[in-house]
Length: 306
Image (cartoon, rainbow, N blue to C red; front, side, top):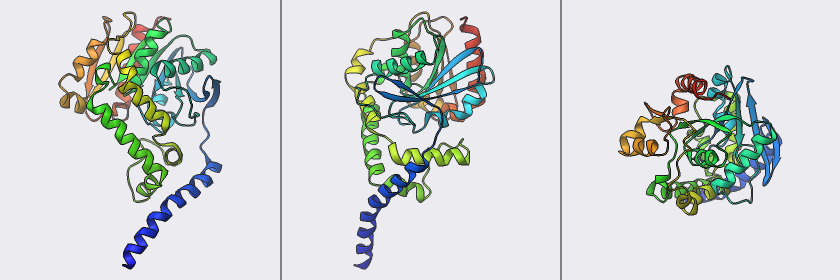
């Protein structure tokens, strides 16, 4: 009986402790990048390197800090390129916005941010759900997008499927767990919450961001749009014929889905487009940063003549 009482008391205390910790952590919130005021709020963006060609890195769904998560591969690519990492609304240190999370809006916001920074010609390089953002973006601003580097990206044929519906349910559950403090408890008990490539300092920053905004409303709304109206909107969309696409697919996904590679071939018609399958799981840029950085730089040199 005493054990049951203690367990109940602990469960009641966890949300209270979590709220107090979040309040205290606001005083030590990570500080990186610069804030750009655009429609919908302030977007945080980091710029690494000053090479002639520009690469814009876009995150997969729910990545708590795109700047920190991409830091390893960004630093590798910055020896040859200027690497720009905008954190879309709901990610990293950017605001959570009230604007609809349609992919047209997301692409437009990123474009406004890049325009205010003076970037008019670049390669988009994105992971997972950013594949849909890049597809929308390239069709909205084809004259500015010189190439695409896709990192095991989502494709239109996934919209409305079981995997997206499962992802929405999972993100909602994680959001609830974060609000009531279970994510903090999970981390305290040794659960894996941090990308393995981060330094100790960056891991601490990433963790603080996770405790305050992991799987927030903006993340959920984007998935819902993909599953609903946006899925219909982009169902037959392909990249413009003028835009070459280098795609890196995870072997784990290629093996588990017989049409994974075919679905990616269908959305690009450029003669220089190609697909490479890399060993490991969905996070190809964490598993193969040096190989992807080198091949992406070479691909950009071959196709960006601006």
